[in-house]
Length: 498
Ligand SMILES: Nc1nc2c(ncn2[C@@H]2O[C@H](COP(=O)(O)OP(=O)(O)OP(=O)(O)O)[C@@H](O)[C@H]2O)c(=O)[nH]1
Image (cartoon, rainbow, N blue to C red; front, side, top):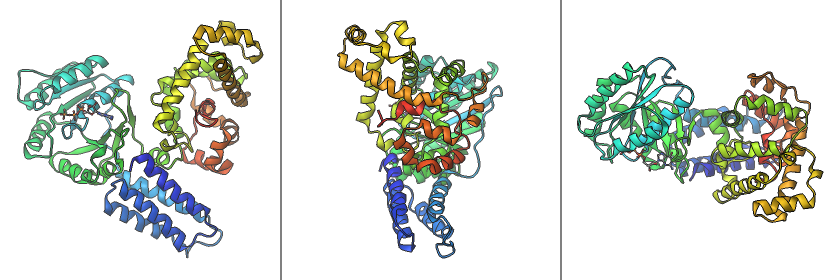
């Protein structure tokens, strides 16, 4: 079962329970059995699932809950907490510090995505101002060095490796030395993999680790390996001091649940997940927001981080200022579409919104939405500055629309459709009018201004309904800590999901 489906199944089980008039032993058992089945089908280890069921039953003692208690919420919370517990070893991994040299060694089987992940990890930190460097100590796979070289060159990250030297320990030591001298603060060592777990691999890993004394060993695991995940993770942990896990290929049709059980095997947290072949298809893994997303409860903080990543800091206050004045122009719409396109796969962004689990955004629709946005942008490219900067849709008469359609090689009907979309968005964004704007560089201040009342006006009604109305929204915001700023983006994704 794909993770999105797993989330869908658990949400449905909880929903069915919520629909029951009275929650008694039978209703609770049915709900827990459905959840158990879904987890097992996703290859989560049997023992973990059984423990989870027992724990929930212990917490939710229906007899002890007085009539006034909100049993639904207590059960939902217990499921949420138990899922988090499976994924959280209870202690954070070593975290490298910017400006201070750390050596991070990557281990994993061949094909797990180790080399790709090393570069993604380096690139992620480089974007945040670190000085990373890559060392290729994989002398087993022909072509490994070329691959690393190619990736690092593309990302402009310094690298070290050798075509001549066959001793991985020597390469690792030389590479680490060199980059320490160059004051790199994140030295990443990519080690060899093998097709299967074998003594030679573990011995090599041990030697490289002993020689380079890494501050952190990251175990890279392919999410599609299913039930084998637990044993594989344990075998690596026994040979080398694994401190963190990265699960790759979470974008595929993998049974991700199994890989997530690796946390239990290594007692180390998953710190990132790989969600595609590209360099930036890489996400920080946080247990609570992940479980929230899995259950279709949304992940405001991830969503907002994503927005803040793509809307340049200096544009944010300006945009908010315009919105607070109620000036939603076609140019703003254009810029926001540009930002959406930069955000990466639209389904990823969607899955962060409450009520929009990835399941609700099938692959086909995603392409369709993206194509539509691109089409709108092409049409806006044919507009004059006056048209783009006006917030008066009446300006757009038939002859202007005809000209735009001709210029963009589209039908007038499509320009009209885009204008309808603009009006719909302008209406939603107009609710931002009067919003108190934080000073430059003070984005978090907005979260204090943005209360549930405000959010409820901005969110499309069906989304609000899915969250559970005003009450659900308030809970959600409390749960997520802060809603940060919405920037009115909910509107862009609203209205039926394209
Ligand atoms: N879809 C998807 N593909 C990925 C992801 N991470 C890696 N890959 C692909 O998986 C394949 C194997 O990745 P590599 O990085 O070459 O594997 P490796 O584990 O380094 O292999 P060895 O160096 O032989 O140990 C490549 O085609 C990658 O593009 C991911 O998160 N999603």
